[in-house]
Image (cartoon, rainbow, N blue to C red):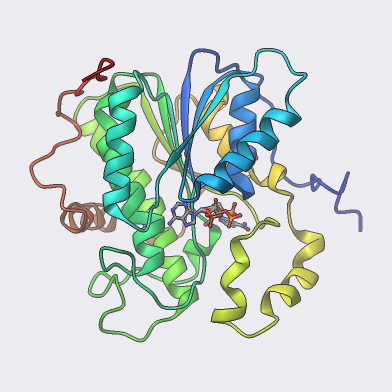
Length: 330
Ligand SMILES: NC(=O)c1ccc[n+]([C@@H]2O[C@H](COP(=O)([O-])OP(=O)(O)OC[C@H]3O[C@@H](n4cnc5c(N)ncnc54)[C@H](OP(=O)(O)O)[C@@H]3O)[C@@H](O)[C@H]2O)c1
């Protein structure tokens, strides 16, 4: 059976066909020194955007930036790329990064919450949250809300959160989101963090509507099963050789990073979904999420718990004034 039309793009894989330009727009992508995030940055750059790469390793991010610029050097109307430090396993780092962005960037038209860790051994973020829940969900939750006053002034804007079909596999345990009382299961914790991504995107759309805020759309998505570095923890959490074994078994069915970035790009730029919000996508079409990801009660509850966990305090991202950029020298 022919699965590939080239070794890069499976036949059944969705593709963003929009030729929309992003000249004069600013896009921010988290965790994008490799994998589908890097492809997303390159696409936005080709469309003419200013792209902010929010990465935990400045060295890796600078190398990715150089690679992208080299690949695109003969293309017309490319944008520019800015590298910034943001470690999502530290809410202090998230706050510092958000402040820098608010101090310097007059607008944020596209935010892509892309970074992720999968099936890592049991661990905690700097703030004491389970690593996957803290990194994949809470850090993106905080980052989005801190930037929201600027995004509200940058409409039309889109907030894209990369989830996974893995959100369908397990549930969300509100009594023990951080595995303090139950035994740790790496796959279950990844799944829970990815349900949280879907619920966050859904509830953000609901709250924007409730506050009468127009022009900001939210999207969550499954990018496909892709050949990236995401499986780097599989040998530690499953068995030695798991990453290689799964790579051999699933390899022919896996997407390239370029193909894996298509649904993110579709949600971020395509005219076809410009009037949609709060929905979940796969292969560039709307998909119904698992019941856990479509439960508005869960979405509200997770929101309230997340507000407490990231210590948002009195800050209301839907009504707070945009602090404005700082002029040079301030
Ligand atoms: N690959 C798949 O098959 C697949 C399937 C479903 C969903 N997804 C989702 O797609 C997204 C991108 O994954 P990918 O496949 O491109 O994986 P990847 O190649 O491993 O890339 C993940 C990116 O996230 C960054 N990251 C991890 N922890 C971070 C932290 N604490 N702070 C800042 N950045 C951090 C990584 O930076 P470092 O290089 O510094 O670690 C890397 O740039 C993830 O949200 C993942 O859950 C992927």
